[in-house]
Length: 231
Ligand SMILES: NC(=O)c1ccc[n+]([C@@H]2O[C@H](COP(=O)([O-])OP(=O)(O)OC[C@H]3O[C@@H](n4cnc5c(N)ncnc54)[C@H](O)[C@@H]3O)[C@@H](O)[C@H]2O)c1
Image (cartoon, rainbow, N blue to C red):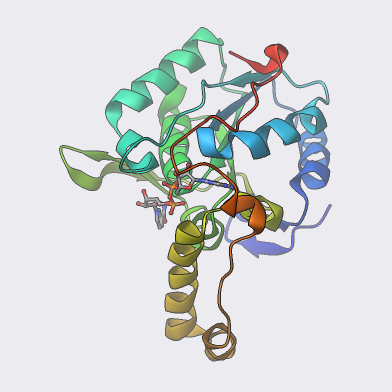
């Protein structure tokens, strides 16, 4: 399976992750797969899990909910402690794989936890917001907020791969879509004149599926995970 883009040390795969990820996992033998997802990415994650059932052991963190203030409020040392505890509890060894499934908050924090657990285990990014797909999941910048300072503590480490599946944007609220699109415009303005012209003519529109979702932070629409996937 060839990547769609090859960034330094990091292949990027585009398209349905339920197809690409199982193939990639079969090529890379991991002892365990540990998924970190937040509650809003939970639905997407649940639909993906059966496709991952290719002989890997899956341990899922309890969904991190994005209460008032969004998922950013969870990007801190306390949540990292929960994640590291769950990793220890699952007896993750150094040959395990961590999958960060969510927006930039999950990618930054989950990557940081993976990069520091037992001096570093492999991780991949499966971004589910436009901002994470176009920016946060790319480049290996990982970290958390500390003492009120954004990204005060962190490391640089590339994921083993990034899987970008635009289908996940179907449930993304208009506000988050606009926030990601602003980032696209910024990058286009700085370094891609063709994309800049194209983006000037585009208007991001949220899918009706996103519009029918409950307000940001509620988890009521997320079905419970099958018990075999719960930690
Ligand atoms: N590492 C980097 O290079 C880099 C670059 C830019 C931003 N960031 C970081 O990224 C974070 C912001 O990322 P973000 O904008 O993705 O925010 P986020 O991770 O907070 O996600 C925004 C909201 O969307 C929800 N969500 C995620 N996927 C969804 C889906 N498919 N459907 C419905 N809801 C969904 C989340 O639960 C959250 O409430 C910040 O912490 C910022 O510091 C990092």
